[in-house]
Length: 213
Image (cartoon, rainbow, N blue to C red; front, side):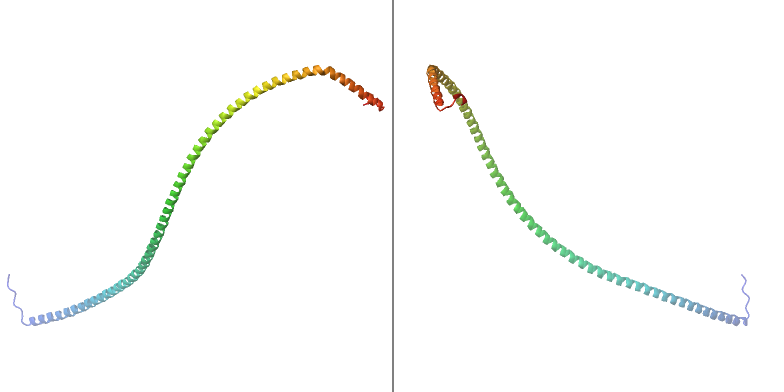
């Protein structure tokens, strides 16, 4: 490589001067760019700040709503807890009352059950007594019926015997009475004829015709 040719000493200051001028323009340009960038950065920072403030305001509003909702939920929870406690108290009271009624009902049921058992036992004893009495009465009735049948048979036999005897006595008496009637009939006939003639004569004496009577 060949060495550069020596430059004129008069041209060096002008080049240096131009170089200085270019550096100042660049500095202005750079300063302007820096100002623009700074303004942009500032604007961006302001926007970010506003966004952060809006976001913070939203967060605060959400926090206030959340706090209000939390307070409302707390109050609602307190009301529900109070209602729950009241319901528990009522439930305990109802359970206690139901337990008392259940015990009373159980006691009454046990008492009634014992009474029914005693009544059933008494009725069974009465039934057994009635069955024994009925069996005794049935046997006595059967014995009485047997005795009645036997007595009736005896009475029928006695009546039949008496009827035969009375018939025999009656026939004998009638036979004797007929014999006596046959024996006294001629005397009665004569007496009747005499009595008839006597009455006929008396009627004629009074002027009456016996045939008209």
